[in-house]
Length: 128
Image (tube, rainbow, N blue to C red):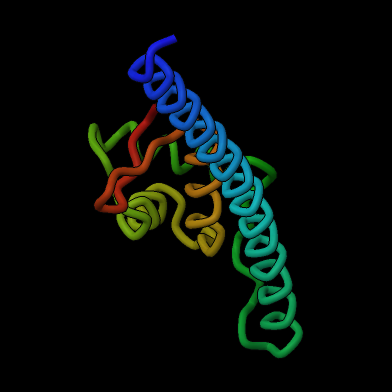
């Protein structure tokens, strides 16, 4: 094998090694993101419990399991374009006044990590 062929082979191997490392790092980052989203959701629930206990809130209307994500998708669909987290909250508030919306950011992030939504570099969410 010529010196040039050997160098090309080593370069190809190095490219593959780097691609494998990047894929592993991406998988680790997605797993960590999923864990953080779950922690945020748990903290939001605990915050609501404490606010109710302390009398700071009267117990707002709560969404059922998966309802927030459905409302987020509805808001994005009806907008016809991408929405930021704040815009999604505003849209949901219009058709579900009084709904507790603190888990909207976590729901959007989770949906994006699962591939149901995509997020652009400006923080807008779109249907995938």
